[in-house]
Length: 210
Image (cartoon, rainbow, N blue to C red; front, side):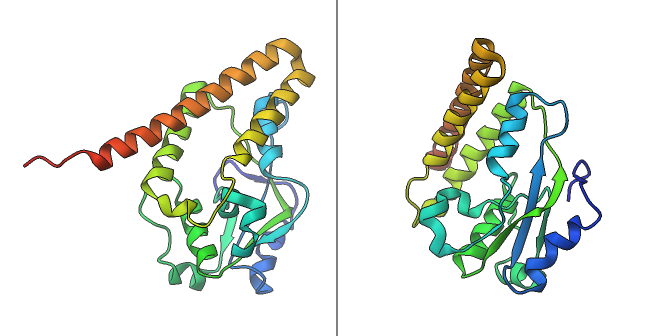
């Protein structure tokens, strides 16, 4: 749990760990609610990823979730230590250790619970440069670990759904100015992600000096 995630009720942690004690999942993550007064981009990003309905994900649900099957944000999450140790714990990586650990759990038969009842107030107003850096790192991770995509289909659908939803929210919130902001934001995300993938391929394919 990060230092800027604020529980919304006294029983938030109890709800978060309940699936682990019940044996229903080997990891669980809670709902992240946007902070009051944030703009439509910050609010929509949280609402898109953290809905009001709880569920449990397993490998057989990959057609439903796509790449989001491995989502388990450790900004607010709980893990069964024994299960986590069986898959080698959190991997050494500069980004995405929660995603990669969740993937390992899922691909070895584990389950991950999303607990909407366990809620924290947690969102960020990233500057465009910070957003681009984050998506660059995601691009790197996706290329360095091609096993992420093995067995998955329609891996780009979540991104397209997010983009369409954000533009719709922008139009409803602030009209043309909001749509322009949303398009710049989405273009920055996509371009930095693509740059991350290219950089990873270049680094991987570059010959070592003799």
